[in-house]
Amino acid sequence: MNSLILTGGRIIDPVSGIDGSYDLTVVDGEIETLEPAGSVPVPGGGEVLDCARMWIVPGLIDPHVHLRDPGFPEKETIASGLHAAVAGGFTTVAAMANTSPVNDSAEITHYMLERAHEAHAARLVPISAVTRGLHGRELVDFDTMIQAGARMFSDDGLPIDDAELLLRGFDQASRTGFAISLHEEDRALTAGGAMNAGETAKCLGVAGIPVTAESSRVRRDLALAIGSQAPVHVAHVSTAESVELVRAAKKRGANITCEVTPHHFMLDDRAVLTWGPNARMAPPLRSPADVEAILEAMADGTIDMIATDHAPHDSRSKCLPELAPLFGRNPGTCLSAQAAAKLARAANGVVGLETAVGLALSLVQRRIISVVRMVEMMAANPARLLRLDAHGCLAVGAPADITVIDPALEWTVEPETFWSKSRNTPFTGMRLTGRPIVTIIGGQVVFDRREVVH
Ligand SMILES: [Zn+2]
Image 1 (cartoon, rainbow, N blue to C red):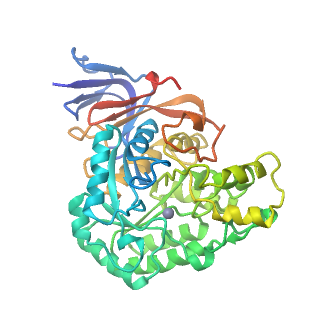
Image 2 (tube, rainbow, N blue to C red):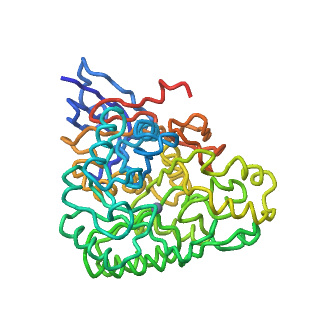
Image 3 (spheres, rainbow, N blue to C red):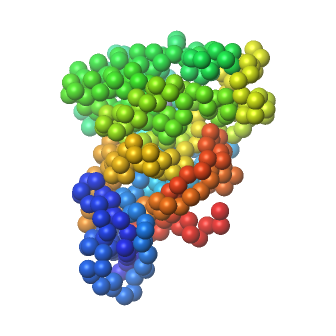
């Protein structure tokens, strides 16, 4: 018998409605008991983890990461990405299909699961492409992919332009019960754009991406979703209008969910002045008014979950050698036409696994969301989306996937200490309070910050 006891922590589990001081016992990988702190003598023999002043929450689940494997080992591998995940408090991550080759076959799904098994870090949930090769022309075989281990479908990185094809995809999602996650972008409106259309884009002299590039697609696809009743998930909403459309579609009874990334709830488009290509992503950072609308939607439940959209890139893909000197120290200067074009060509995305919890906790500290709501958004709701039934909660008998957070730990974001292979973040140097310190998967401590030098 292999046992572990977490004593004296504040257990927060929205699914079972628990928020209080409990001792939690794990035996053979499962949660065995959950009793009011000190009410049961601690049995001898097992490992004891003193969790006084700590928060104990269900293992966090990220429904949207890019692990770049197979295909781009210089940016990330499944092993490095899953180690970054546990260092960031995640016990499960869902990996997008835009690898090379694309994950549109059982063979690639098996490859991902095998690499994950060898990594001995976070659990990996493969996301299958919706269309073969992400070409938007022909659906993958949903049954084959589900049998291989896929638990969601997405062409993320690219939109699905063909509405008729998407509708047939929705039929498959309805039939199988596994959701389709949508990257909403009208490429006719984003072409050539480097950042959100607005004052900052004008000031830098770069082409802008209008909010309608996202919301027009959200409008179309939610109309299709309402009709089909398929489980549909809108990835990384970034605009006030998208949020309003989701709110309205939910009222009409659509089977939809949506997610927001930490960068979209923390930053607005002015961050590009400081961070240049490290604040470039799709969808782009939006206006302060959009961020306001997103925070409101996180609080009122319109936005269901937080997803990092962890998107590792090396500095060359980000054009950092050429562009970095133009940002940061002297923000606000107009870019040359050549530099503006370069910014528009820089790879999209930022890393997020190791900063997400600290950033989400900042919303708890600002009283925008409660910690219970945060746990719902980072564990219970992603578990439901991915149909990981026994996960996302701390019920007796559930697999012991647990994240221990020190809510008072003050720290600074230092990309050079990331477990991820990439350092593309717009949060360098930010001071945050609260950080995951122990990550437990299936009853095994897979990460313990107290043993890490940095
Ligand atoms: Zn995307």
